[in-house]
Length: 140
Image (cartoon, rainbow, N blue to C red; front, side, top):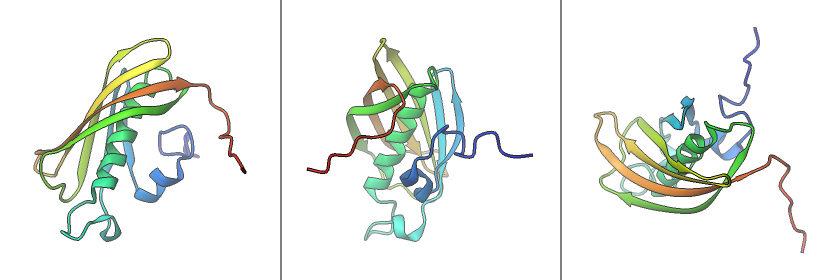
């Protein structure tokens, strides 16, 4: 039997997320959870997960929490604040929560945990709900 969502639970193809290997495990009721096993090319010069990869994990997790209550809509990031508390080592789990929603905006938070369950990074983010349509790319 074919997978009902060939996009790993996200409902849409997200090439960068696919490239990083994120796995969506929770997507319901304002909650989301993603699992991520960083590959060597995702590490920084200290041999820990690069901050950009961690921020992407937080961003996608928060977007998932926002979309979980209206999966027919997309979201775009308006702003994001990230705090790094300690190095992100090994397999990572990120848990997101929709804190408040208006008709057009979502206010979210997410935390990245390492294999030992220690909080490594935390973010808050604001997202705008948008109708799904192809991106318009300017050629100017």
